[in-house]
Amino acid sequence: MFKTFQKLYQAKLTSPRGLYRLLASIIRSKTNLVALMDFAARTYPKEIAIIEGDKQISYEALYQETLQLAAQLQKEYQLSAGQKVGLLCKNHIPFVQSLFALSMLGVDVYLLNVSMNVDQFEHLLQKHPFKAIIKDEQGAALLSQTSFRQVQIDTHFPIQNSILELAKTPIPANYTLKKSSAGKLIILTGGTTGNFKTAVRKPSLFTFLNPFFALLTQLNLGTYRSVYIITPIYHGFGVAALLISIILGVKIILSKSFKEKEASQLMLKHKVEVLVLVPLMLQRLLQQDLKNFQYNKIILSGGAALNPTLVKQTAHLLPNQLANLYGTSEAGFCVMATGKDLQRFPTTIGKKIKGVETKILAKNKQALASKKVGMLCIKSSWTMTNKADQWIETGDLAYMDDDGYCFLCGRIDDLVISGGVNVYPVELEHILLQHEAIFQAAVIGIPDTEYGQRLKAFISLKPHQELSALSLKEWLKDKATGAQKPKEIIFLEEIPVTALGKVDKKKLS
Image 1 (cartoon, helix red, strand yellow):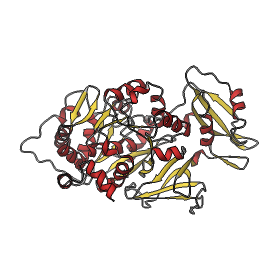
Image 2 (tube, helix red, strand yellow):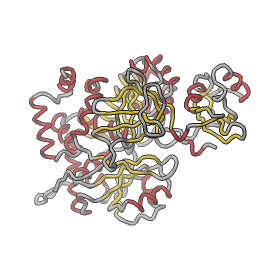
Image 3 (tube, rainbow, N blue to C red):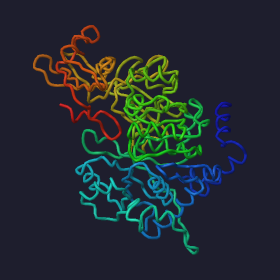
Image 4 (cartoon, one colour):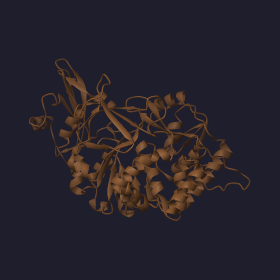
């Protein structure tokens, strides 16, 4: 308990003035997301809040413009509590302002994946009657191909009535902004194998505290002053990083797309101390000039599974800086591995954080003992709210050891039964990635007349490397078991991945 209060004090949250500001912000903002921004604006008013390209904005200005935007959205578009509004944007300042302004109005905010296809979007439209959609240039390209004909609001262009303009329009002297705590935050889940589903969360400040405390106490996050959020904010991992960064009043660096050379240079230019990314981004950044990591203190990886080869490589180049955050769109952030955890167990996703319950279930839904592989299920106070049963079935196969460390074995849908033996493709992927010539590896199951199923491996090589299927099979002889050895090996220029950086196995066959 003492350590927790010490960390909160360092983050200016438990001084008498800090507690007063936090309470006042909650009262003014009715516990919705804007309480975080209200608190930050009063605690760190002149500090830089966000840098995006050649633009930057202070916490005081960010909050004032967000208030103005909320008033204009309410006044011009009659947006109010209970309505559904989609945010179809990449990472930039107008997206952040829109998210908080809509939350202030009590609107149900849907964070939409700009990389979804038209069929997936039409499926969402059938289920969710959006009052409006806020879109940037990439979102507009997708929206133009759909049947959506309700209110569309552009973030940047045209200038007239854009989010940028509305945010800079003062609130009329005789206008009263009506705030509400009714709104929900909806994150899309799935989509890699079919249509997206929705994970609903009530974005209360109080349900946000346990994950916040975990990062503060175990990773010393309150001691750092700059964070580069590279992963998309429309994903649960990205939006969580944004909210935590705002309450800490740190300088947030955003960019609309990930290009490893540019991202590496931004790290040096802005003296980035905290990186928020997915494993593929880290893998590519490590191929850039490592001098650009000189200010980096911690790397928060999430959104996709870390492979042990990347963990060991990072540990060698940047000792103890890598941490793994595991969560799902439905369950949120719930399991964490620190640098020391990963040094001890490179394949672990860590231990559950405070406020989380976990269990491993067999096919018959019975709980399994430690070291037995089954479905990982999670429950927490911040679990999605559109489920009667608050236990979330993650769809991940996993096991727990006697010390509470959790280890993933892949997705349930990926499990291959070859000659009556359970084979986990992720295990072969981990083996393949140990080869010095291999950059990425993805493994799937394919039908086989003799064994029922066998494994098929897809490989992409590092630059200037050569490798044949025959020599790779020879290399695997004493590294993989019989059932793990692939029937086929296919070399690709690049393994297909989703917008978040996960391998897109539906494109492999």
